[in-house]
Amino acid sequence: MPTAEEKFVDVACWSCAAPVVHAQLFCASCGKVQPAHSGADYFEVFGLSRKLAIDTTSLEREFYRLSRRLHPDVYTRASEQEQNWSLRNASLLNDAYRTLKEPIARTEYFLRLEGVEIQEEGKQASDRKNPSRVPDDLLEEVFELNMQLEEMRMTRKTGDDDPDLRQDLLTAKQQFEAQLAETDNFIQQLWQERDEALASNFDFGDQIKQRMVAALDRRRYIRNLVRDVNETLDT
Amino acid sequence: MSYSDKVIDHYNNPRNVGQMDKSSSEVGTGLVGAPECGDVMRLQIKVNPETQVIEEAKFKTFGCGSAIASSSLATEWVKGKTVEEALTIKNTDIVKELALPPVKIHCSVLAEDAIRAAIGDWKKKNGVAETADYVSTVATN
Image (spheres, rainbow over the protein chains, first blue to last red):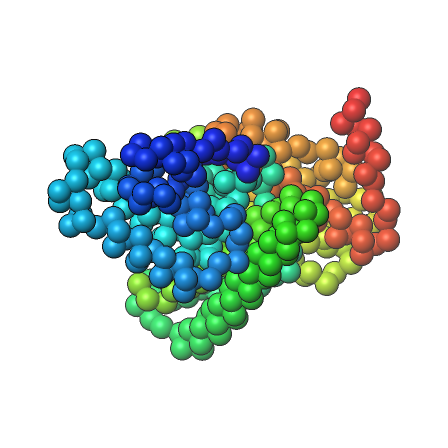
């Protein structure tokens, strides 16, 4: 995957030879579909700079606009090569849109683009140079929650229910969900900080990125707790 | 991946599961966790104020077999040791004893952290200075 430092050399449009910026789906000059590079930067696909605060309404509008231009019906009389390119670009555009429209997916994608190591689903903690820790402020609550979950599982195993305990777990779940929302807000706040840092050319980007990684870890952790409560109560 | 016999033994017959009075001045409590696997570990020690020997150790761990085995083993090992001796227990010792595979090394790290956290808590309660110097001397020798 390309890093921020790598600059792409513009290529020439296959049809009119006008310069085409890397990852653009169409030639700006003649409008012909272009062979998009595999591994193209999703931000560039949408003609966006690598900023995290994105107006998702205009992103959606742009997605539909480009999708229409890539629709197979448009290429029924085009060359086979153009048909292939349009299909590949449509698939690239879909991936790019799905990733960028979701705040968390966008943040994770951004960090990977910038070469930051982040935890991925199914990977083990030991694969990472700096395995993260449960946020200290959560430990007591998490331990207590686990105790309650264990008790609830035992109760349910015997076919019983414990309405009081169930209520406690639901309350705990609500608290964790509120913390999840807080973490989401915090991540968006970090977007602003990073975008502003980029605009001012002031380089504390790495520090912000590490805070993003920590916030994503925290989010994933809380999300798993909420999932555990749901599984214990519903299955 | 399969668990070693020792892990399975500790998992099936965990030693020293339980809880001690957190508010007692003789008891140190360490609570640690790893977000990737969701493991949380509580390890408690009871220290003789005269001899500084750890006379009792209890744990409660929510996590995989390796995490339970690592903390179970940790309680066995700290018992009978002085606080300073217990600080020399390294996660690599736990890895060796339990034959943990590389993907489970973080469980042993968690157990070592739990020992340190429990001792740190006991020291704080009893006004004993942290012995970071001692630990780093041992590591460099």
